[in-house]
Length: 371
Image (cartoon, rainbow, N blue to C red; front, top):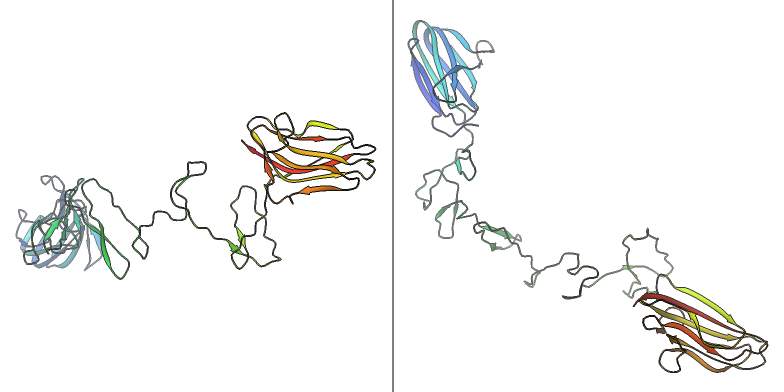
């Protein structure tokens, strides 16, 4: 990398072995040298980084014959040479052997960007354009700093203390969102057509199993015509919600793990547990059916409900009949909705009379949930 543009063009003459032409800090990475005149001798191309010790460097002759060498014998020349000057502080054309004449030497550094080294340094020469200084206006353009123009048409140096302002546009208007201050990050606010800030983009602002807060988010569903069978997805994958074309959701009540349980009794029951759970669990019942055997010779009273130790007679009753006739019964719920939920650790219990000469059947559908 070149260190900054000090010289870009030099013209000189060589009339002996003490003659040299130097170009210091060439702007780009390449130096072109053209020699003309009536001259007999040898020229050498040299370079230095420490600005005190010059060493021979290769050059490529572009004219008489395409040759790369460290030195060239010159007789009545009209030659052009190209030197790679990348990283060099100075490039020199020297005479190492002289016989006669005068050699005219034109040295030209290529035009290219050069950036000062070091953290926090500013651009020295960017694209060969005009450079500015802090406080300059459009009419006075000098200096070395990268600049920006404020609202008063005054040029300001870009620095940590005076960062570059950032503006966003929607293609029709421009609004300043945030001017960067020292050690401050860019803050961008996205708003809707009414100017209200949008804070969520397709994700909720409260995690699963966290305390509820904030406003609800509307959801959508995929419209299906009746008779369509949705394709099953893999367990634990995300799935669509489905609705009819009017937007009414297709919903099946209940629970993904509905359990159906049936029990037959041929004797009287008193506070007997039909379904039991441990502390920390609740039973949710979605359907109850009680039927009497046609062989029964008596009507059978039946009561079913939630209880920790006894069958309820009021609150907690799921179903009750004072006397189910032989071959008949009763039912509550269809299985697609909840008809009752017990308390923590409560069982579903039954109390019934003797079904003389026959039996009774109790059928339940239910699921369990944490208390």
